[in-house]
Length: 553
Image (cartoon, rainbow, N blue to C red; front, side, top):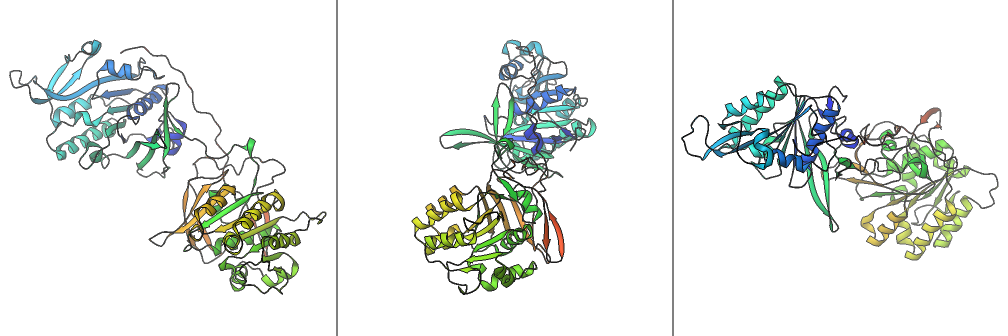
């Protein structure tokens, strides 16, 4: 959305989650429990409007004007700006103007003027009218000329005897301000169960921003999540909401991946566009990658893409077979990409380090070690220390479960350290394939801890396969994408992450010793280009505009 279609919330990350801001001319609900930041976020939304030279109105239904001034005294909001009006409107038992001699238990609509509010008195200076759908509609018709309106909160005007009437009134208010007046409207409401104000409003508004508080270890943290935004592919992840006097309410983290200045890795695309974008341009080069699966999800096709892309780059391959990469399995997968396993073995471009005994040890390029030392010797033969000017990159696909089950725990750990310290060069690719369900928790924890990048795939109860980036120095960490299989190469598609989620950094520069980016790929008779497709980062710092304010209004 553009500035013409979206109204900023006053925070760059929140606006990015909303794809630009709240939809103009629509109503949005900000809901949450006490102390989650509803009022602060709403006033910040109005303050952003003031900075954009828009007319703004803050309607409080639970505080006096002095209370409002005190509540926001610590924040840099322009409460004294002529473009911001603050009104205290209450639904409360009282005596109506229409029946001044009647009982004082009628539900009334009461509006405080400035004089009555100063000093915190409760003498409603301007008027008191019976609260009816008609009077509430008339009241909000007075606000049609505002660009932005906040009603904080909708609970404060819930004085009707039945929810059906109240919902109809809320729809009238929304229509009055957004359809007739073209205002961008925000309601706040307390979180509640069925038939609560928030529950009624969530179906009537265009968007819902949910604020919560949770304990992380022993500390309370605030969180923000875009629960609903009609017609917008918004960010669905939950971020923390930090509130401080200097910058108001802001969603964090704004960036989940390392900045270019401290990058120590490159990328190796595998030719599946959505996957490559998800992980930041391709799997990490020069460090370990852990590819976890649940034992039911298909991993063979992904591994085929890993191997095909490596061969297209001219890499040498080393495979410690998974059960899916027995001779027939590997031959079938690679032949689908136009490769002949026998020829690759004979040419020294493919080596198999077989710990599970499924390959013929007499074949060219097949190594059959029985110990950790034997695995190291096999890798030493694949890439001799005295290789001289041979700078061919090595792509290794390792069945980590074979390490764990065929060797002792100590040997498996030593092999993992050997790979990182002696085997892998900055241009190499090392992928461990692991099913956590087949190993002790401490084994999985060790593999995850030593990996630079952790990618998960699993099959849901509904039969859908997903892939998730759980750990990475780059890419869309925390994002889950759907997997779909195709009839043609690369035989698998991965749903791409939202195009304007935070920067995965694949397009940013790398240190020279960690090359990355696109490379020409030659596969049989066809030529294609594998490119890191992620976009350049937004590097602008959050706005730090300062404002002046007065102590009361």
